[in-house]
Image (cartoon, rainbow over all chains, first blue to last red; front, top):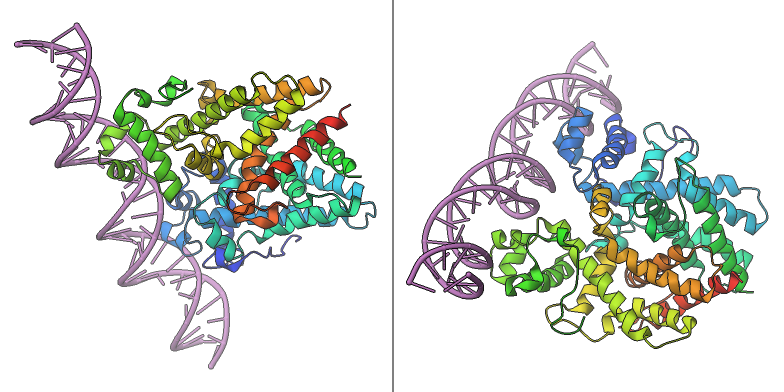
Length: 227
Length: 227
DNA sequence: TTTATATAATAGCTTTACTATCGTTTATAA
DNA sequence: TTATAAACGATAGTAAAGCTATTATATAAA
């Protein structure tokens, strides 16, 4: 997943591969920017087309509807985080150190080097924080899950669970802790910025160190305890 | 908050108090059932009016739009959970025992005795699990927060944080753990039912005991560790 | 008994969420 | 190089969503 390389995502998510054409890449690029700007509810394919100087009908040739586009973007994010974890933990023996890196990646994903020119990963991270869970909180979740649309999140969770089990094979909730660390990272960045009384951490400018410290505390104290 | 008693919710959430009239109570009742049935995205005031044999215009006299109605229902739930915690922990000295009851309440809220005839708390719980976070994941969160629309969630979190601090005054993240226990309860019930690879617990029929056990494990092991 | 309020019925308007058709470019391949 | 297919833009059209407004009637309060 370096510059010029394709991200592999479930083919059912799109009608025509958006990574394969300039227009498709533009759809990805501008949908991230526009959803971040006006929110997912107000986002429409018509507004997106206007912003890109294209047409609604052209956007519909790539994605069936905005919900599938959201799953596409969220899946992209999960893949990107998985990729970052892989390259950052490569050659690192100690599983505790690897879990530390995973937590840092969850928190600081947006600050990492961009990989693909038409995806602003920093904006994408902000989008995931505020809109991400809408991808799988729908009436159609079971059908979509059957199609494999959430496989990237599952694989990411499994990756974290594997490291947790390497640290402590008797830890009883590795998957739950894995997904919870990811959700907590996003939730508490959001809470710190919008609903501060739901958390104890503060986020000043781009300083996410308190979120990182909290996740480290939660993760390692829980895993310790299993001994 | 017994039968016949009103739940106090922010007045900015509605145009006319739905608890004060039969039509208003019907709006509450049927919106819970209909959102649960078809999902929040497909839910409209027109469909709601049809189901209640009323009119769209009449619903609009009570709620400005479906988003504020959702916040209203979610706030109701937060209030209801707070109430359950209060009556169940009343007269209980030991804060550890009180935290146990709080966790049980988060998990088993839907099985508790109904308090108000026009609210099906069991269906409401299911709705909160699948749609709840949409109440505060919007572009308007800051304005709405300024209006005090999320005060009930904050108070609930504060209630849990107080108990955590009573158990262990040095615990550094009482609010975060409080809100996380609530979010985790809902998330992992949802994961167990729809995306099981994101968790380690299973939910068979209405048996939520594994979710309860996991939350107990997380909460008490973390708090222990602070000593 | 008047008067205010609540509701139902109806209409209408703009936007959203699509689908379809038809030229005109642009890439591909013979 | 030309034909030919695919992609795109332009345009039109439809049903539903998300409202607002008006009027008539039923009900409650003064």
